[in-house]
Amino acid sequence: MPRRVEKSYRCDNPPCIHVVVDSRRKIFKVFLEDYNVIAPIPFDKVIAACEDVKTLKNLVENEGFREAEAEDVDMLARKYLGAEPYEEEIET
Image (cartoon, rainbow, N blue to C red):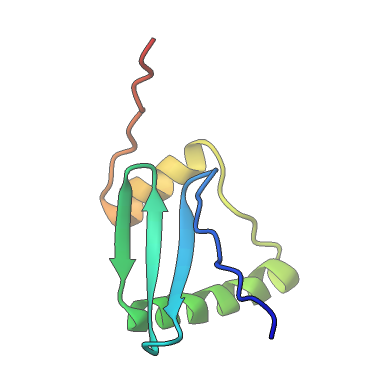
């Protein structure tokens, strides 16, 4: 019988999304990892986000939408999320 290999959940380039499954207990959870924060995400919100991504994929392929970069990211965060971007302090 082949030996079961454990999946690595190492996040080398945050943010990362982890889908953690314990088959023996038949439980799972989706987590969002961003540096020192690991947040559990309710499954219904994951499903809703996947549906949005599916719709967005069609817009990218058929209507020329592109992923926001640089200042556009900040604008979207401010306008739609009411969030201000932050700059991470670098310790020397």
